Image (tube, rainbow, N blue to C red; front, side, top):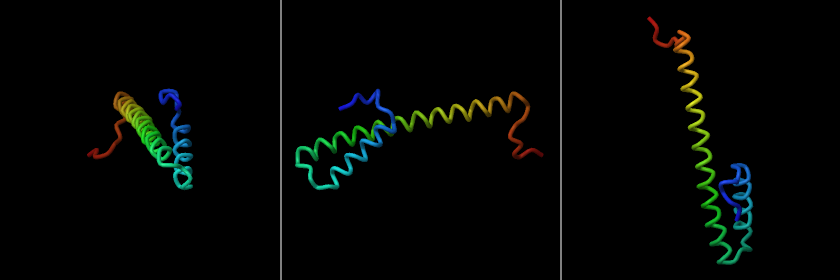
Length: 81
C-alpha cells in the first residue's frame, strides 16, 4: 500500500473508486474483500483528514479577511444604525 502521508486527496479518492469497482464486480474472494475494505476505510479516513485540514485553512483565511476589514475600519456593515 502507498504511504498515506504522501497520498494526495485526489489519488486516495481514485483508489477508493477502484476498490468500489472491484467489490461491486463480485470477483474478489473473501480475504481480498476484507483487505480491500480495510484499505478503503484507511483511505476514507485519510480523505476526511485532508478535508478537515482544508476546512481549517479556509476558516483561517476568513478570519484573516475579517481582521483586515476591521482594522481598515470597514466592518461588514450589518446592523449599523
